[in-house]
Amino acid sequence: MSFVTAISGLNAAATNLAVTGNNIANANTTGFKQSRAEFADVYASSLSGVSTTQPGSGVRVTNVAQQFTQGNINVTGNNLDLAIIGEGFFSLGTDATSDRPSIYTRSGEFKLDKDGYVVNNQGNFLLTFKPNGTTVEEGFSTGVMQPLQVNGLQGAPQATTSIGISANLQSTQTAPANSPVDPADPNSFNHMSSLTVYDSQGNSHIVETYYVTQSPTTPNTWSAYVFVDDKPINLDGSVAPEPLDGTQTSVTMTFDTSGKLTSPVGPTTYGAITSTDLNPTLNVEPLAFTFDFANTSQYNSVFSVNKLSQDGFPTGNLTGISISDDGIVFANYSNGNSEPLGMVAITRFANPQGLNKAGDTTWTQSSASGESLTGEPGKGSNGTVKSGALEASNVDLSEQLVHLIIDQQAYQANAQTISTENTITQTILNIR
Image 1 (cartoon, rainbow, N blue to C red):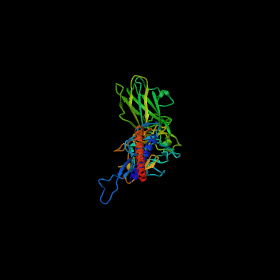
Image 2 (image 1 turned 90 degrees about the vertical axis):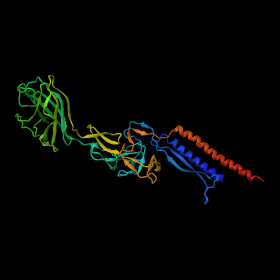
Image 3 (image 1 turned 30 degrees about the vertical axis):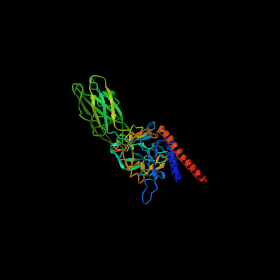
Image 4 (image 1 turned 120 degrees about the horizontal axis):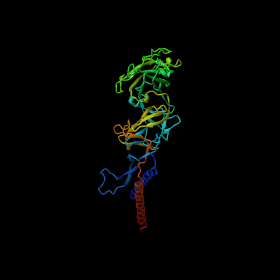
């Protein structure tokens, strides 16, 4: 019987050594969680129960439990490297059509495959929540997951809807010699500014604004005439007759005696400009915008434009992706625009130690782990996502080396028990 007890101890000690060795072997494995062997004593039982003098029948391994403590966060600088700070797992699908996770991991070593999908080293697909639109404000469908794909994306253009200017009109100017305003005649206007705007297909157009003072006839009063692609535009969006006959409508700007703008108050709305009026070959949505002169002044200094702004942009090519701490994945385009592609889905379990170990630093759900709870990063108990970083193994090598010494002593002690038992048996058998 003592042989059996010693063998059970020897097997338990061997398991402990294997667990410690596995921890040491994975000290540099990203997202690895160290394990510990858990044991229970063994007693022979009968109908009358365990006797108070029963010495016991050895030991057995009850569990090899993984410890889901946080590992150190190591900065890598690679945007596709992700780390979870706090609870939860990355949600992975096994193919490009996956809409629910089947594999979970803490290892965020992601990269692009040949089709532009974000995958781990084993080719499993990172799942994200689908965006509801093209802006973060439109939100995400947290019940709809899809593999994250960034290949072949092109940033859609946005038509200009507002223009703003910050400028100073020189107060000592007098009305030009010639009239009406004609871009080809510098003696028909006092100042000019221009900027590029965009239509619904991303085509660029040049908006030129010509400023004409009414001084000295009407002091502190200016007229602003707008031309788009050299076409004179009325306030209603129609094109004024050409050659110019002085009927083009304009914005009247008035200033007080201190040079501050008093009118117009708020942006001026221009009517829709038909695309074929600008270019007969175009067939896009009419161009309509507001023009805000609010930051215009009239001081005794030379004409200057401090700022010109507009909210449109052309078509853009993908230049890279970035991921925020709340898990939102952005596609960045050459036109300066960013568009959300998805939100990283974080999955938690009531009992992560109950997860099935699947190898490759991944786990699968089991009855012991409880149902998966998938949600947004940073919400509730879900951890946050750190881009450009990886979670290191939570193995403490110094601690494991101490365990190795203890495990070795336990193994040797159980082996000594067998050796001692063998000596006693031989002594008994040699008695005559």
